[in-house]
Length: 448
View 1 (cartoon, rainbow, N blue to C red):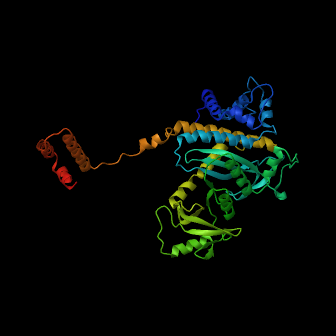
View 2 (cartoon, rainbow, N blue to C red; view 1 turned 30 degrees about the vertical axis):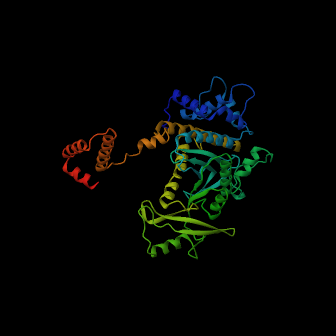
View 3 (cartoon, helix red, strand yellow; view 1 turned 120 degrees about the horizontal axis):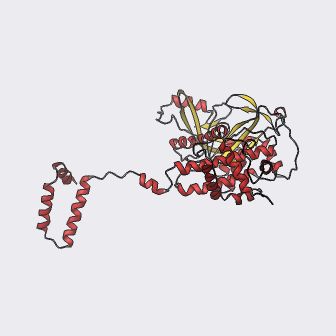
């Protein structure tokens, strides 16, 4: 929140810059957000997006002179709006803008993760469920918010989201009303009850179809499975994830089937020496649907616990272990996004009970974060001149003084011959010049 100062002038100026950059009116029309009369939709969205930066909810915010709060709520609750498409289109426009200031050699990556969307005191919220929190190891009322983001190493932009419920009847708490199967609302509700790993691949497919050129997909141990890596390879993408230290997943190493714990014990007993930044980096093979898939593993010491280790895996065998560690480190950006969204952007602080309304609330949270990410990139990042920054920041090479003097003497000799100067005159000039040099340089010149 510190990237935008808390006064109305800066907030509206940031929004107008954001709106002009992403062509917001045209994108709203492509996401089925239109009005036949009254105030323009772009004006409604300016009020909705900037309200949160004044630390107000829709119910407590000051009403605009041109429309009522009910008008804004009706716009949000429109069942024909494709909120997922709206977030994706805005993300694409921002990526195209950011790439103008980014070196083409920089690796781009998609990041997948989910976070708990709590609704502890809700009873009638649509599709409400008991969901398991992996951090606290217990069930909560609410949803799982699956998010797909893009990163170039500096900026993180959310691209897609899915508000996940459950298909387990025992964990269903809210209303599961039936809607027209041909409608957009029905497709979103069907997506909310499917397997989360399958929905994650659907979000990746939508990002690829929209033209996102990221070649890597990052995810944590919850999504890391041989099938996930295999499915990404079918889409010509390489996955980088952390493996679970479980005995349920086996791979082949030097003709033997084993799990990651067994392999670690074998490597420790071997004569392989550990490195400074990682422990071991073997290449193993997984078998998925009868197809053999090679993968590179990287064993890394767990920070703060020298006797513990983490296991990273990727299907991009050409990556060095240090590069794999550096790429996986970008995954932390999506954790920072969830923290900012929950602390400042009212991620799960809403009284909406309909599933469509919750989806539009999340879309507004993601778009508000886009404004913050854009402001942070433009205000804090010095790399706004592309390759010129790298050329300017690259250290100058250390020139050898003897070589420089030798080049100078050769150049003077060439000029003397060009202007037909006598050899005796040149030798006299050089002798006087060398006599004036320190004895250490004279020795270097003799060697050169």
